[in-house]
Image 1 (tube, rainbow, N blue to C red):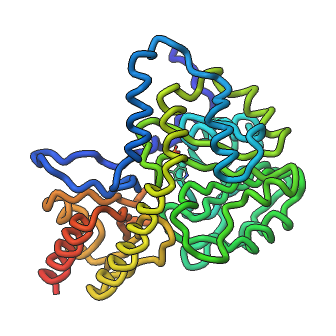
Image 2 (cartoon, rainbow, N blue to C red):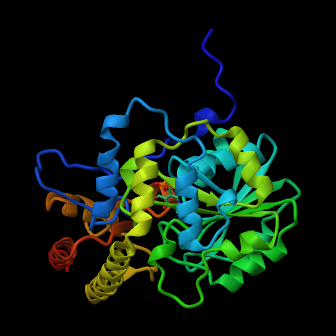
Length: 364
Ligand SMILES: Cc1ncc(COP(=O)(O)O)c(C=O)c1O
């Protein structure tokens, strides 16, 4: 008799991360995973190294120093901050605690792929609401709510579309949801946003008992390898997540590097400024090539290609790969006509624009 897997698990299409290398190419330009091209803060690297001789010790399971540093940096109550092995782990823990078979988990059509995956892994049903112009649509989300809805996930800004909802719209979403529905605002890219009407969601968390905001050290802090994220929660939700998480779910080097990264404001500013500059430049350059770039407030751009073979996204992907450039394919998001390109170093962006110019030029 084969082992019995819980219903629904084998329906999950496993998450495929961005490629790190290309066969036969020594030097590649990695623009597939929205990583910080400037790397981590030197202070974070030093803190990480500082723990090299302490690897036999368990970490602080309560991540107290890190939670206090997060609290100070963002003006939040550290007692309601829960740390995790990347925000991915927090998404999974929230799902495990609040949804199960028979429940629905709502997200927007091109929301982050881990929402449906995590929902299915607990036996819940993921429900995708339609979007308007590749952005979450509050009315469509509210219209998709049913008596079975337990959690609504909103990536703000959203990956892979780069779109965002103004704070007022997020509040309208919360106000339109039943009180027994948890709203999770995934603000993984919050630090990159330079719009006045954007709000990461912390105030909404404080305003009630049913909003959680998740954040990550994988993006602007440049610590993706360490797997470090956090959630800001109502006290009751923090209590629940602590019950289901592993006792030592965040390693000591990650905690130490996170504290140091939070202290290096200049590094974060530099990364934000770099991104703002090259995001605008890249978007203008690709538009001049006749490609459609979705407006983005994150550190990546979703580029749409024509549908005819030879000029489509797959052909562009192969062409860029041949030049040692790794963008992200978007088929898993139902955006097979698009590629997502992370904002890299100046030289990376110039190489991508030159390659895309040749790709478009050779085909007109
Ligand atoms: C919207 C969003 N949320 C969460 C994550 C997960 O980040 P991590 O688990 O590295 O913190 C990502 C990573 O790409 C993301 O794009």
